[in-house]
Image 1: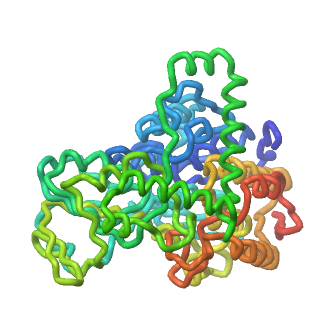
Image 2: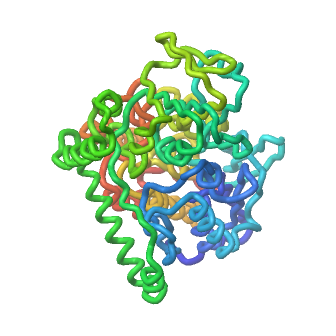
Image 3: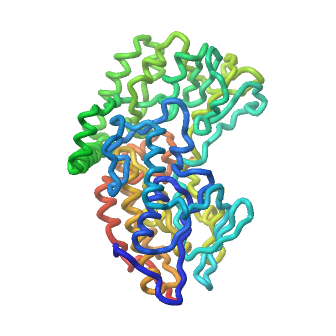
Length: 493
């Protein structure tokens, strides 16, 4: 990437970045370095994205801290091997201040619609409040995990107690001594349930599918370790690369029928047997699908929490909610004072409810009616100068999404710099190139456990994997080093 690419005389150019999370901030820093004007539109009042939003008890990262940070902005003094949510938010807030991004952010500005003006090569953008903006290029950094998914359960709206989603935790609700019902048992639940279980009167967890859980190698960093990392920055880089290589190796566990996958299952079953002595409960918690088909969860306290006398795991499906209870299909009523929905996110809808309209008035939501797809996860044919961070098929099950985001930022920056330098009206990926990329990706996907029979947030309702990358992250890095502009239509001014 060039050090600075100034728009040519008489050519105004600007980029709209949607979202001030990990992706949006990295994109802004890259454009800033290239000398390209940008504005970040952030729906909330602060930076941090999903880490700002998920404030539930025990919230933290399941990727090691050293790798869950930008390669250009390492942090030598993480408090733990796996950072807690407040520390991650502090990190991103510090990055925004250090790189002087705050003056470029329009907070409390949620974008409702973006329409491409083909004649002028401009994106016309409208906020929820009705404000209108224009930009030559748009980079969406809204990610995959920003819209909580609420369960469609009869009577939920009639519940008289407190009810909220774990991603929008209501800290004003007291749970001490209360009867609490948790709907869902995924990555958020395994973090907050152990935190609240000792405090509540009784906890009922409504489980749809058990998880593969393995021990989390977490501990605080010792002061001498942090002092050493501060004194010798090269050690931080070495630790980062070592962590990356160890996680990259784990991809082998996600190949169907692999030896490494069996090792994961063996470790998970040993953990289950160690903590759960009740054979009936152990049966409920034993998965019947390959490890990795759903997200493998790292935890040291989930099983001990479920073994508590005041915790009950219920596997019968929920029939309805009444004013004061959750009723299952077998007719059993479970009284509740508080309902917490730990039911994940609207992960396969990507940009919804935002409306994005490209060339020929094409509606992106309509184009994606059968499942989202993009060219290398960042661009969609027919939507010129529109790019995505953490877009379709760029999620991971084994490594750090920050690594993927930096690959995408590098690629998108080169595309935008080319638009500026070559005085292009727009750049649009060719349909044939996008089709070929996704055909090969989905063929590779069939070798992985993500394409196995279980349902997960990685898939659409008809079973197509739209969220995950199908191979090693090193392969993605290699393919994203430089755009192949033969894959794009370049339209001049």
